[in-house]
Amino acid sequence: MSGSSTTGLISRYGGGGYIQDLSISYENATAEIEELEENLWIDRGTRVVFLDFTVYNANINLFCQIKLTVEFPASGGAVPSKQFSTVKLIRVCITKQRTKNESNRID
View 1 (cartoon, rainbow, N blue to C red):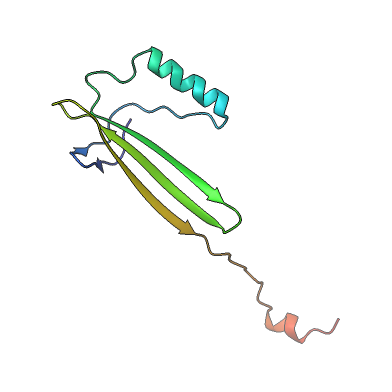
View 2: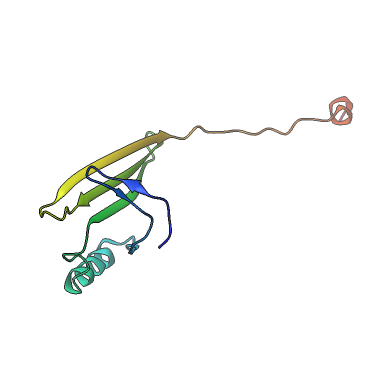
């Protein structure tokens, strides 16, 4: 995986690593996570896990980008952190401008 670097509470992490896109359905996503766990996707060499997702509330027209992070320092343990970024999209209406000829025309 090649991407931009990200900073956690403990360290800065380059864009390398592995990625798993989870399915939209709960059942499929749960099965995918169980498969990762069975195959020891997280092991002693793992230093960080990011879980990124976006939710949308149509009632108030808000998107929220969420990043959940768990860092695993070499000394042991786990350091969790979270980041939320909420955005309200502005509705844009585009109207066609009439040309001079269309404005003077009588229908």
